[in-house]
Every structure is written in C-alpha cells, then in structure tokens.
Amino acid sequence: ARAAAEPAWPSLGRDHSCSRPAQACGRTAPRARQQAAATPSGCGPETSKMSALAAGRKHMAAGAAALKTSLFKWSPDYVSAAYAFEKAAVSFKAAGDPDQAGEAARRGASAHSKTENEAAAAKCLELAADALLARASSTGAEILAATQDAERAAALLSEASGLYRVAGELSKAANVMSSRAKALETAADRLPKANESRAKLLQQALEAYLGACDLLESSGRVAFSLDTFRHALNFVVKAERWADALLVIDRLFPVYAKLNQRSATHKARLSKVVLNLKRNDLTAARNAFREGFDDNDYLRSDECAAAEDLVRAWESMNEDQVREVTNRPVFKFLDRQLAILAQDLSPYNTTTDDLSNMSEPLVAKVAEEISSAAVSTTSS
Image 1 (cartoon, rainbow, N blue to C red):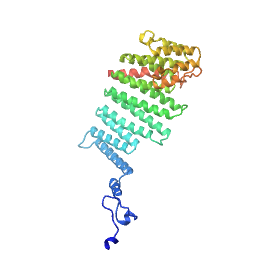
Image 2 (image 1 turned 60 degrees about the vertical axis):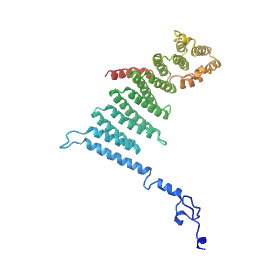
Image 3 (image 1 turned 135 degrees about the vertical axis):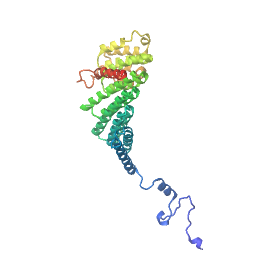
Image 4 (image 1 turned 120 degrees about the vertical axis):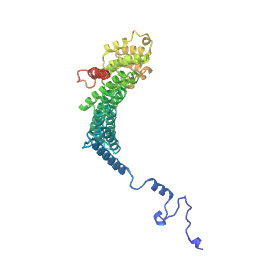
C-alpha cells in the first residue's frame, strides 16, 4: 500500500516527466546538469575580455620594468622588454582594444629594433595593423571611423614593409605591401565616389600594389608578381583609371615574356584595344591592335581576329556589330573587370578617366619612384 502511494520516479539517465519544476521536486534533468557543467560560473565574454586586459597590463608593466636601469643594472633589457610588449599586444588584441594593442606593438617594435631584429619588429607592427583592420571591418563601424582605422593600419603596414626590406626579406615585404593596398582599397570602396579622400586612398592603394610587384620582381619571384599585377589591373579598371590600366598592362608584357605565357600576351593586347575604345581613342586602339604583328602566334589567335573586327565595327559606328563582336567567348576570358567592361562597350557610351583633374596617370607618377626605392633596398 505504501509503495502504491509513493510517486514513480524515473530511472537515472532519463528526463523525468514530473509536472513540478525541477527545483520543487528536488531533482535536475540530466540535460540541465550537462549545460551547467559546460558553463562554469563566472565565465563569459566579458570575463574573458577583462582577463585579457589584465594580462595585457601585466605584460606592459613587465616590459616597462625591463627597460629600467638601476645601480646593479646599467643597461635596459631590450630583449625581455620586446617580448613582453609583444605579449601585451596579443592580449590587447584578444580583448578587442586595438588602440592599446597598437601602442604595445609600437613599443615592442622599438625594443626589437634596438636589438637589430627588424623582422620581429615588423611582425609587431603587423599585429597592431590587424587589430585596427578587424575593428574597421566590424559590423556597425561608422564610415569615418573605419576609414581612419584603415589609414592608421596602412601606415603601420608601410612601416612593417620597410623593416622587412631592411632585414632582407623582400617576399614578406611584398606581402605586407599588398595587404596595405587591399586595406586602402577597401577603405576607398566605403566612401562615395565624389568624396575627396577617396582619390587619395585610391592613389595610395595603387602605389602599394605597384610597390609589391616591384619587390616581388626584385626578389626573383616573377611568377608570384603576376597575381598582384592582375589585382592591380582589376583595381584601376574598377576605379575607371583607363590610362593607369594601360600602363599596368604594359608592365605585364615583360612578365608574360619571362614566363613564356603567349596566350596571356594575346589577351593583354585585346585588353588594350578595349580600354582605348572605352576612352574613345580609335587611333590608340588601332596601334594596340597592330603592336603584335611581328608575332605569328598572335596573328593566328582569336584575340587578334576579335580585336580587328572590334576596331572595324567601331570605325563604322555600328553598335550592333560592336555588341556582336564583344559577345564572343574570347572576351569572357579576359580579366574580370575587363570582361565586364567589354560587355558595356558602345561607340555612343564612352567615358574619360576618373580623377581626370590629375595631370598624369598615377602609375606614371609613382612607378619610377617605387622602382628606384626597390633597387636601392636590394643593393643595400
């Protein structure tokens, strides 16, 4: 009788179907116990952030102490200070504080430079730049604040690239310069086309892309410079800098020749025709079409036939013929932005270069300066 009066409790390991709350019946469901065990009390995002900030301050204090001198310590311990500041930068970055991370990274880079470890100093600056770029790309970031963070990160990456060059690591210097260009390009894309700061960011991005290409060529990694050149080409075409795009293509021809990429050379010649027609410069388009007449492979290529038919259709001002030519598959194998541009070609829809108030193309102004800097760095 007593057994019949007592409630039937579930077996261990199964969720009970008691209608009373778990606290009232004195039992906790197994799933609730597992969740409680998986989430210890006092742990969470805010706690982790505070712990990272505390660790960063602790490492900063250790670095500052290593730089102090005393009666029995006549010179600063730059090695210990550098690694302490580097750990502080990592902690501040994990805590989501790029400002303190940048300060710690700069002090770490300065300490590494005292020990003539330029590569480690550059790595510190990269760490600070990554923290700034992470905040700039975060959801909800204001355009002005994100642009300022991107510019600060670009300055740090430029300094890091210079330190890698001093250390003789030209490949790493080129990669950092390419990262700088992408950061500036992303910042420029956030701004309206009429914004004055956008022109400056575009110019700096192009300088960085060309600098990365020159560094890769100087280090003997011509094949690796090809992707950077193509990215720079798509960048200037997207920015509607037709003159700069033509000069980037001219710089691609020697690279294609070294790599024996004849098909890519044919595509580059067709790209020059497309760009010159977009500028409504028919004479330059004819010259670009005829440049490869000394190459028998080019004369037999589909690119040569397409370029000839496109120039003739343009001369007759026949928009239907132009569209018929540009719909050929050969145009779809051009670089992405040029393929898009070719589909929009029309004798009655031509444009001039963006930022046309500049007296000469960006490439013309910066290529010689970047090349001389790369040569001087290599010789040193």
